[in-house]
Image (cartoon, rainbow over all chains, first blue to last red; front, top):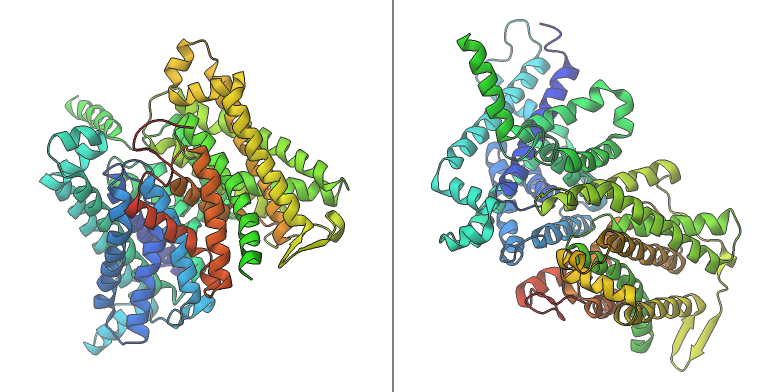
Length: 313
Length: 293
């Protein structure tokens, strides 16, 4: 039990979960075949909105996080509308520029505290344990207060991730999800079938931005401090590499990618020093040998068939 | 004041044009965006710095050396990151992601080798002579930058439109299949184009390193973004557009700094991207369909 509740392991699992949520955010945009390089920018909008609301305006966290997501989503509509009317790489370029500009603006604004960043953000764990102790539930069995709050954060994150997975699988079976898939398969054909491609691409992009903004708000309330450097271009590349490694056909792909790539530097100490170089090399190699990522629809079908046969025997 | 700023803007803009030409050449021929171009630019700057600092060569020799080294890097990029993708049909995003991988790899390699601090060219690399032309004061560095950038741009223009190889490049840009049928070795032409584009990026790196007197591993990202802004401003794959678009962006940035918002200088490029996408998505000089170069 002590091993499972080890502070360090819990921390890693929390990071894995936040990264998995970010992986879902890039999956959302990729599910229409568009590449957004602004996820770190949306994350920072969510994080700063959320942190300013809780630290300076005294909002409760459960309200501030969705508001941060909504703010990111709103801005994404302004960026996305001109870029998504066109096909191809325009969105990638516009969002790449956008990410840099958000960084410049945050560095210069007073309310974001410039390069110093915002510190003293109440962590999610302390908020939750405060709430619990007001109900008179400060301890569970033999757990310390710290362990309890970390476990509860874990539960909240798992719940959010599970909801997102549920939402995406339901979405994929709906009219909207089918429109996404057809745009990804062939945009001109989709348009010829009467699908308003701009509308659906924009919808996917805004949903992705909303999730990224929420993840930003959550991560602000997990790390105590946010600064403009946390959301630089490297962060986007990191998020993108989750989807590249795991695959972006199915929602499980980026989640597995996030799991593997977050665990890697923890398992291999030397890997943490060369982390970004490994991500870079990984992207080149994956694109050359397995552009669909580790997990594609065929992989799932293959294993289903194989396992199904074994059950029959 | 105005004329002085105009000259400064032209100098800055001519380096943007050089970088954007690299994007445009690759965009025109391969129809992809080489996201690693900014890092090729950074690599060129470091090669130039190394040649001047350690081998004590003349600055112009260093520029030539940077061009050659960047061209070799470009060839490596083509062979490792782009050619494997052409062999099979993959989505449009694959080369984009692959070159993003190359860019992040190169940037962090440079951080590992050279460290994050910025380095400068030695003071005597190019004498700090200043010329006074009426109200304008122009430094020797600026003259060299303007001379080399415009010289290279006109040579490139002439070479593409008049020579046999230039024609082959333009044919490949129209259609790789047709060019193949006409007996052009398109693989060789693509290799040549990427090498050429990278060489232009490399020399731009040395020129920018000279003018702001700082060479650092992260200079590739912001320059790459500006090159992309120029690419959209001038129209994808349009050479005249890249040249004039670079000058427009340079002048716009210098005037932003001169008349007010100096800390928002890097936001100008993005503002231009969004504005152009709203008003004229094909770029200032682009046509709606086809017709490259």
